[in-house]
Length: 212
Image (cartoon, rainbow, N blue to C red; front, side):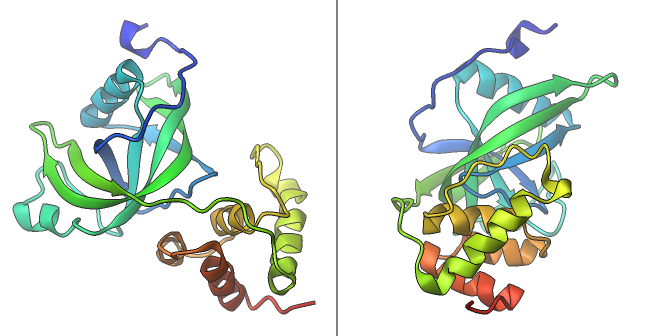
């Protein structure tokens, strides 16, 4: 086993000014998780370095594949985009020598500037978005909390290891956005919502959930 990939229990690091990015057509929310398969050498290097440095990675949504030889215009287009920084909570080597990861969402960021290293890995300078403290769920959004509770008990949700607080609007908004079968484009819009209240209101519109 590669010494750089020895499993350890690492403390949550401070949020760095520069992060490594994985750009793909999926969305990670804070307080949720994402399974991720590492298939390319640039990302294998990223995993080794992140584990060694005890830092996380940024998950950034893009519909189109971001190749290892992106041009300056493509890199410039990333400026201002919002993604989620996550920690590698576990990893699993596969028989074909690739890796499967679990990424735990921690905090949103906004890109200031991005560059691509020699092997195609994208590194970005970022500004951190302050996440809200827990907020009581309002009567208006209580049906969404009930919906989340119902989803969490559905047979298809078994084994997802979901953790949320049904009394907290922030927790409900992030976890429901994560679990609902809506497009990743809609999920990205939800990720970019400035508050839990706005996110829940948008979810109500998307899901057509009426107040009980």
